[in-house]
Length: 157
Image (cartoon, rainbow, N blue to C red; front, side, top):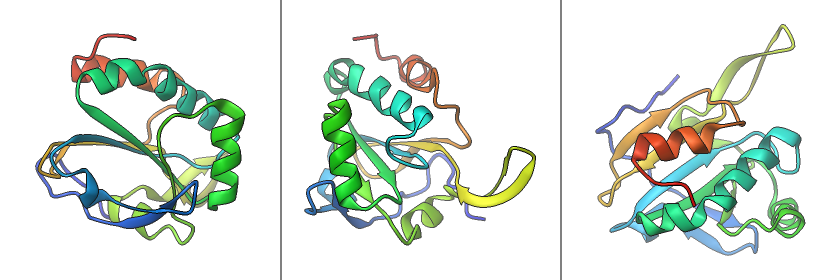
């Protein structure tokens, strides 16, 4: 399995957002990006994590970060997620998990004692040139954003 390391170039991609508009990672060159992969919209852990990012947007944007969330969900489900929970950043659809695989956010994991293949909850911090600054694999939904803000030296909202 591919695992990105700090200093490596983040794989570029173009995916549809919740409004079915194409979004390319290269569109964000010159800005710092937090790219996070989550298993499924509107599930408890993923909602907690998305709402934590939403509630931290002022401090993250103030420190120059743009947040992008990626899942295998179709745009219509992402649109519902945004509307239900007031998500204020782009949610991107990767239904064939090709981008997940390119980032190492797809693979075997343990779920209730069984080995399954699926999304590995992961977060990547990219610098202005598109290089990976942080590659965080198998993160926990609860408390992750607070730990990430601390790692990045970003004050709470």
